[in-house]
Each structure stands twice: as structure tokens, then as C-alpha cells.
Length: 400
Image 1: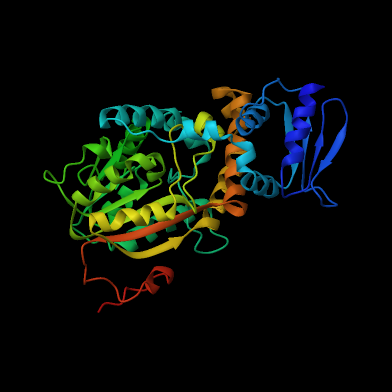
Image 2: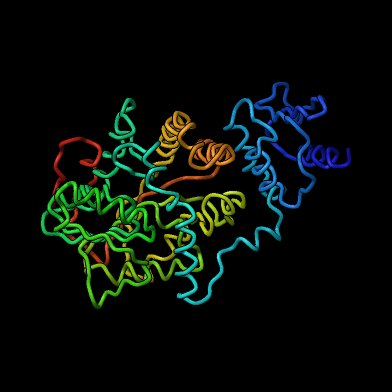
């Protein structure tokens, strides 16, 4: 009863949405000032007794099947977002800040963290990603676009912003399973893709060979920290969905390497999840899904540009596109429960359901966003007069 009282106190302290809790002993309680409950936490059994880190605790209880969530997940994540101070204790927040240290130590941590998530296996991701094997925000040019078409749209949008032309050298930092590199090579570019995931590197090389593009695309199992501008430079750089793994202590290191590897007048496209403020990462996500990840604030990215002679040309939010992407992934993941259960078990299914469903709700209702930043190294006077061609299929850019 004492622990139930502690949960009651926690739930009663949350400000915002009205919700219901059905406790394991049959008692129902409503929290909040509204008449109707937006969602219900339905406990199937008494949870274990510890509540030092409420957000991690509640996430782990869900993964363990202690309770289920009925109703509006968007409202649930609005509530979480509005009550971060209560749900993430200060001491925990401090320990989750990305620490500095030597670059050698950083590289070891980054390699381990990437392996935790991306090296779950190509067979796993192939179950529920579409045929492009893109694991980043898609771009729904039309409301009825399939997930695969939307991913191809996203890649075309990236390459159009960069103005990829035959003969250009493109560096793809965090190349995933290689679909963007393949598309750039098909436009005549020569591409170097970097990844820290051995599974991704293997899968990307196979896909590139199947497309007959091994002579134009090189996949390197390499850290961005090992880039050396005095050895090789590129006309264009793209990084999609990788910057979230860098950590605030090393943003300058990232932009140092990228700017140094870019030719004068060259363009860089940075595609990253963002937030309004530089909060510490969600501790449950940090522990179970993306260890070492940190969502950058838009202001933190902008603050890096002047010191690296990087000029902001175009910025775009794709927030609702990512919510829709995650909803597609969740639907596909739900259709593969039997296969996923055979690989990792029931707890993994619940954990990833919480991750995918919670992420979609966070992009719709909390403070997560996603931006594409188009940058030039120094001045570039050969850009389109405007960016209207990006949103009109088949339209050529208007030149000065």
C-alpha cells in the first residue's frame, strides 16, 4: 500500500492532461481537472517497488507487461513533456549529459552505442523498413504516398537541395544502408559513405553491388572524427539522421571535420531531429534504445556555423512528415510480431512498440522536431534564385 501511495502522489503531481489509472487491486482513480480522461494506465499486476527515476521505471514496467496504455498516446506524451522536472530527477539528468574526454574515448563510445541499436541485424530491420531500407524521416510529397515513395521523395529532396550533378564528389556521413548513396551515384556523383555499424556497412555494400555501382560508391567503416581535409575534400556533404549521436560536447568536432572536408563554395545538408531547448536525453530511450544519443537544439546548431565559415541558405521543418513515417513503421512492425518475437522475445516487442508509438506521439504533440539545414562553405554565388523547384516535380531550378 505504501508504494501505491507513492504512485498516487506522483500521478497526482502531474499537470496537464486528465487521465485514469486502473490499479492492480481494482481501484480506479482519475487525475487532472478535466471531466473526460484522455488515456488510461491499466495495471495487470503490482509493479516492483522502486521509483528513483520515474520515466525509466514506467517505461520498463510497460516493457515488462505490468500495465497497458489505452486511449490517446498524443495526450500521454504531452503530459510527459509538460512534467519533465517531475519525471526526470535532476541528478539523473546530470548523469545523462554527454561528457567530453579524449577523442579516442569518444570513438570507442560511439562505436559501442551505434552497435547497440543498428547492429541488431539487417534481418530485423528488413522486416519492417521498406525496400529502400531508409531509417530516417520520409517526405510525403502527396498525402497518399507509400512509405517507399516518401523515402525516395526524401532522398530526391536532399539531392535537389545539394544540386548534385555528374562528376561531383559527395560525402555521406552516416550512410545507413546506402540508398541515398545509390541515388546520388545514379545521378553521376562519386560517393563515399561513412558508417560505424558493421551490419549497415555489409548491407550497403551488397545493395550497391547489386545496383552495379561499386565503382562509384565506396562504403567505409569509419568515424567522422577520422576525416582529414588535407587528404581529401568533397564538393558536397550530406548527413541524414546521424547528428543526434554526436552529443553536445562534440558539436564543434563534428563541424570542424565537416567544414574542413568541404571544398570552398561547397554545400552541406544536415538532416537532424531537433528540439527548442538543449534538454538532456530521455533517460529510458538513452538506456534501452539509443545510448549516448542527444537531440540538438536548433540554436546549438546555428551557433556552430559562423566559427566554421558555414552560411545558412535554407532551413525546413519536416516534423509531421516524421510523425507519419513513424506511424508507417509502427504499422509494419506490428505486422511482424511473430518474426520479431522469434528473434528477441516479447519484452523487446513491447519496448520497441513504446519507442515507435511514443516517438510518433512526441513529434505530433511534444517538443520534438526535425530540420534540414542547407549550408555553404563560404559564399556561393551560383545558387538558384529561389527554392520553389524543390516542391514542383520536374521543375528546373531558376538560375541568376
